[in-house]
Amino acid sequence: MLIKKAVLQGIASGDIDLAFRCWKRPTVKQGGTLRTAIGVLAIESIEATTRQKITDDDSRRAGYASRSELLEGLSGRQGTVFRISLCLSGEDPRAALAQQQPTPEELVALDQRLRRLKWAIDVLRLIHRWPGRRAPDLADEFGLPTDRFKPRVRRLKEFGLTKSLKVGYELSPRGRCVLEHLERGPA
Image (cartoon, rainbow, N blue to C red; front, side):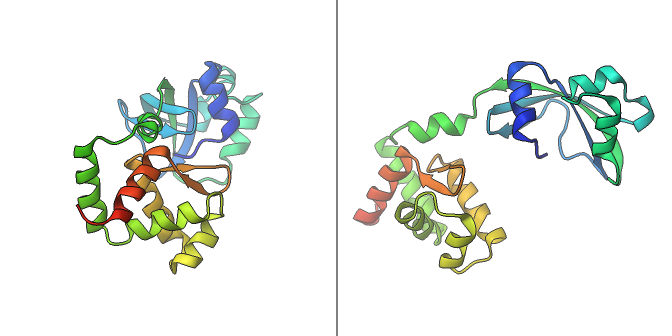
């Protein structure tokens, strides 16, 4: 579920606590979470509804000036309309992980895991060499289409090794430490 930056800011401030989406089937579930640029969102409820049941109050709670503005945003979209109640539940744990220096045990485990991925060390080296470079440019240099390169970077982010910038990526402090360890040789 993609959420615009202005809407995320409204969720963070508490001004927005609803979202409406048209889907063939929901991409979030009640009780689930969603990681975003502002932190982790809690999905408090999700229910199928109709455009006719959306109220002016719902529209304001979803960050729209009016019901007609919200409906305009849904126009042309196929599928069932879903009303999603959400709130900010905390920081993205990857942000804290990215700042932590790995323990010796974590270094050994990361070394083994990243070497099994085969591509991981080369992606880390590429990001280290070109911080802030556009993902399509990095993907081209790596020899993959962008849509196949980005999931690899996201996987490294799960380990706290990379950080997304406004444009491109950079290694986190944890990522720099791990790359230095990997460059020294196998564990």
